[in-house]
Image (cartoon, rainbow over all chains, first blue to last red; front, side, top):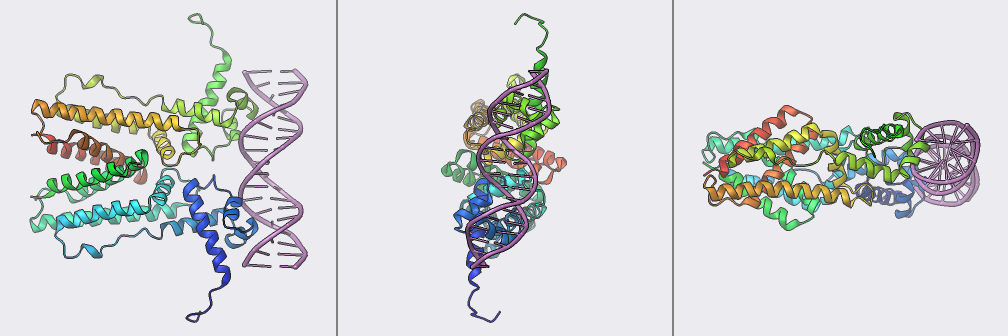
Length: 201
Length: 201
DNA sequence: GTCTATATACAGATAGAC
DNA sequence: GTCTATCTGTATATAGAC
C-alpha cells in the first residue's frame, strides 16, 4: 500500500465491530455476549459482523488479540538504577499496569480460570509467557544484586521472584474482591518494603 | 420425621441431579452448562430437573450452596501451639483446603472475577466473609505473638496478615496457570519460612 | 460491504399422561 | 415423581438483493 493512501472506509466499520466486541466480551464473557448485541452496539447488522469475522469464535479470538495488545513489559526505565530501585520499579510497573487495564485484566484472569472457548490455548500461552518473562526479570535483578553484594548472599532468586509475583497476583484478587484501591496501594507499598528488607544485605 | 424413617426414594434422584449440576457448573460455568446436559448425565429428563428445581437459576443457586458447604475454617487444632506454629498451621490449612477442593475453588474464583448470574451477591458475600475471617485470625495470632514477645514489636498485624493472604491467593493462581503442584508446594514452604523470619523477634 | 429475510439448532420452560 | 411431546424464544449462521 502506498504511503498516505486513503484508508479503506470499510476498515472503520471493521474496527468499530472489533472494539465493540472486545468491550462486550471483556465485560460479559464469551457465552453471554450475543452477536446481535455486538451488531446493535456497533450500529451494523449481524450479517455484517459475520461477513467480516466468519464466526463468533473467530471474532472472539480477534477481540482477545486486541485486548492483549497493551500487554508488554517495558524494560527501558530500569537502566541506571541500582537493584533495589529496579525491584521497586518492577513492582510499581505491574501495579500501574493493572490499574490502567483493570477490566481486561479481570477478563483475562477469568479466561485463565475457566478455559472459556476451547481453542484458546494461544491466549493462555501468551499470558503464561508474559508471567515467565516478568518473573525471570525479577529473578535476574535479584541474582545480579546478590553478586554485586547489595543483596544477601543467601537469597533465592527464583523463589523470591515467584513469591513477589504471587503476592502481586494476590493483591490483584484482593483488589477485585473488595474494589478498594486504597487498600491495595497500601499493600503494594508494604510488599515493596518487606521484600527489600528481606533481600538487602 | 421419625428417626430411621425410610428415605424418600425421590431424594436419591434429587441428590443425583444436584451433585451432577454442581459438578458441571463448577467445571464449565453457568452459561455453558445446559439443563439437557445435567439431565443426561444424571440419567433423568430435562422436565424432571425443572420439576425439582423450578428453573435453571434456582438449580444453580442450590448447586453453589452445595459447593460451598465444605468452606469453613477449623480453629480447633490451633490450640496448644505457640504463635509461629499457629501461623504455619493456618498457611498449611489454606493450602490443604485448596488442594482438596481445587475444582470448586477455581469455580468460585471465576464467579468472583465475573459476577456470572446477577443474583449471586450471596456467594460473594459468603466468600468475602471467609476471607475476612481467615485474615483476622492471622492478624490476631500475629498481634498475640507481638504482645507475648515472640514476634517483633514493630510487626503490623493487619498488613502482615493481608500480605500472607495475598501471597496465598497468588500461589493459588500460579497453581491454576501452571498446574504444577510441586512448584506451588515449594512456594508455600518458602512463604512460611520467609514470613516467620520476618515476624520473629 | 452492507443490508433484509430466513434457515437451523437448541436453549429454558410448560402441558399433560402415567 | 417421572416421563414424552411441545411451546416459545433466541442464538449462530446463510442466502441473496442492492
